[in-house]
Length: 394
Image (cartoon, rainbow, N blue to C red; front, side):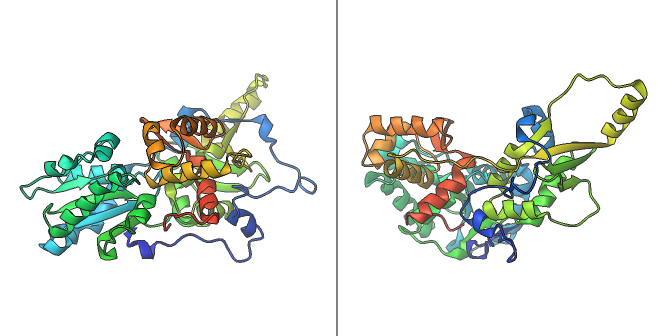
């Protein structure tokens, strides 16, 4: 499942040519197949279903084991690491939002006892304190820089750091190392200092088959039952674990295409769509209850919601909000205190916009930074692309 490739070899999953829902997915109108209520009755009314508990979600869809991803990365750079080639001293690992490229690079560094370089603070960058670059290993020891997106600001003074960094890397002064960078920051930085594609790797897209393998493996490793993930719209099995059938349901194919192969985003959508039936207190005869208990030990149904609500920007805040959302993506999230330095907006207006966007599910505040919410990412990317903003290559 886990393969690292050069960015030009990244294969965005597509939809089958015969799919009648292709247009709906391309325009991001929904996540799963639209239900024509005039001609079809829902198998399960979603109002009768409930979201799964955090504990139950962790059993069915745990967070990615990034050690496995790090092992795949290591297999991809074995020859580079063993080679004595001063002209190719740095590997660049480009990751899409929510695919955890930074932690993957950190784990790879720990595997090789590499020194981890911490990102400078926004205050250091704006103050032009380039002494951060003087703290680099000077004894030829292997190093990793997990978050290049946090090492610059789209500001005249905020680009000095990254220009000096690229210059010293090209000169060979920093020796052998690995740099992780968000795909949005990478698109921006390549217009400042292009890097040879031969030194760049990214995780290959997750198509429908890869998603099925990943979801099946996650569920099977934590359950002794057969789990049926069933569509609330028509009752079909979207995924059954374990299963002898080597098939990919069309809904999984559509999910992969909607997320453009971004495994992190796909998992967030999948987790958000899972539902269970509400518990009842109805008592059953002992023999019937015993029979059902035996069946429950061997099989369980988990329902998959048919539609997720589409985020919509309130009227009157489209342009300013678009500027704000774009700068958050370019930097992989930002503290609110620096936004007015990067945008033609006042600090009070930036904070007001952030709070409004947070209420409607577009942004979140985590680890002292504002960032795009996982479930709004696909919509925001499409919005920016449609308005001819710079977007990533994935």
